[in-house]
Image (cartoon, rainbow, N blue to C red):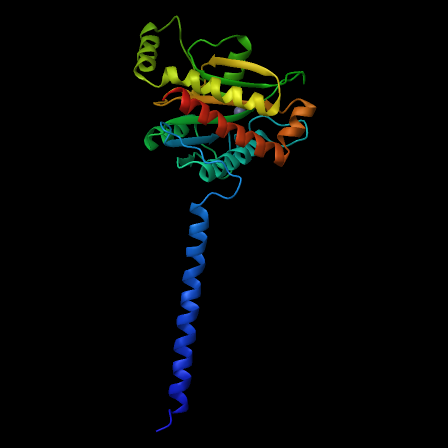
Length: 273
Ligand SMILES: [Zn+2]
């Protein structure tokens, strides 16, 4: 008996849909395979101690940060570099990479560091851009937490970056408060490692950009205050300087800065092994 036309048609439809299903499953599989194998030319980085990295793009929302002489806001540049850094880290390492913000939203300093504490981060990088009202300042500097600033300039910068959330220390009035913070700092095992992190990140950035090395400094940055892991503020360059601002706005330069930050994390990981 010859097959009825509707049965043949149904058979063809079933065959076609199963082929289509196979094809739709095959595409993501192929993609997944490609993602797990590093592309040609990409160097795989084995981080031994640094498993979770929290990147904090400074400012956000109505907290604009400083403004470049070309009008672009610090909060936008820190986010762009942070997203690039996250992409670089995910491509080259197996570390868990988290951002305190991935869009233009406001966050308090406390929220940022508590996010990192909750995540059990091994490294916390708060990304910022510097500013000098006289338009002369240039270069890169990194900061780790200290009650006492390295110098008057560092203290001024910490106050500016802290914004409305001033890191107030009633030094004379309440010695107990100071003692409390000191104890807190002593209890944070990672605090000493913050210096190594600040040194490694600075070295990698200066090597890549050839910009002025302003050194590793200390200041009472609110965003670092409750850190339970090595935590630093990175001032990636001056938005108030015509040349540096131009470079900081350049997509390719931001990529290079992100790649250098990865190398800095790698240097730090080697240092603390
Ligand atoms: Zn800032």
